[in-house]
Length: 298
Image 1 (cartoon, rainbow, N blue to C red):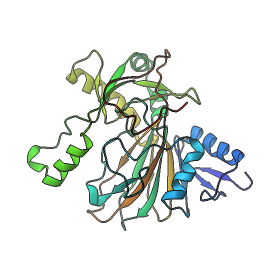
Image 2 (cartoon, rainbow, N blue to C red; image 1 turned 180 degrees about the horizontal axis):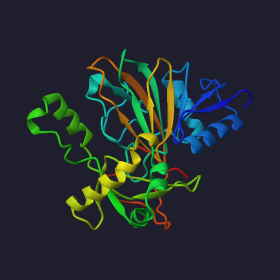
Image 3 (cartoon, one colour; image 1 turned 90 degrees about the vertical axis):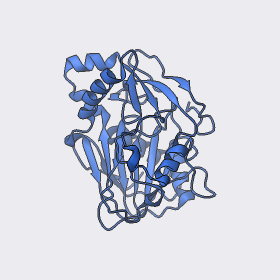
């Protein structure tokens, strides 16, 4: 582990890691130090990395099994575990979300590696849902502790039909080609740290037992704590960077502010466990089989 340095970036989220070559196999002590840093800081930035698709996957495997690229969206050609996050494949994911929460066991962690970076814009925002939970007034916290939410990949994206072009319609059809509906606790307990975090985001569409309108008001109220500026790391991409974030206790947002210029990242994710609420009850699936996408982490 000699030489590894962890430099905090903001008070509530983010650290920069240096002194380790993540293109090479990591010793157990180094991998454990990175995992601990991820537990503490939620998102880690590695600069000047010398990675390709194979070595990015090798790095990710230090933390668990690798998922396939996505339950419904196609991977990089010939590389089934790598998802291209590409401006040419549609607009940025400019909504707050946690990766793939519509399946029973979403990824525990995600990595993004810069391939093509626009000359301006294209930042990725990453928010701490643990900080958000800590900031809730006690009455709201007590309410959130009792709630469960249905997450789905098939919902009204609030884009007027006349503004959806043929390419966007095709992308949406692919994204929803298998419909998933899964119920997760609104407050998730992190399996390694015991921290509580708000497990909501863009795929959470309805609170169990409430109407869509009532659900939206409560979800919006809780979401406002997640996206407080003091809870957000705004990462401006440079060439040859990798960002690792804990998908169990963060949300992220790709900012569409680069005028459609080329932007490409490659994403590799670590298979996750089934979320657990504060009373020890696990999430449950209503619709959709994701076994082709991910194993359930032990």
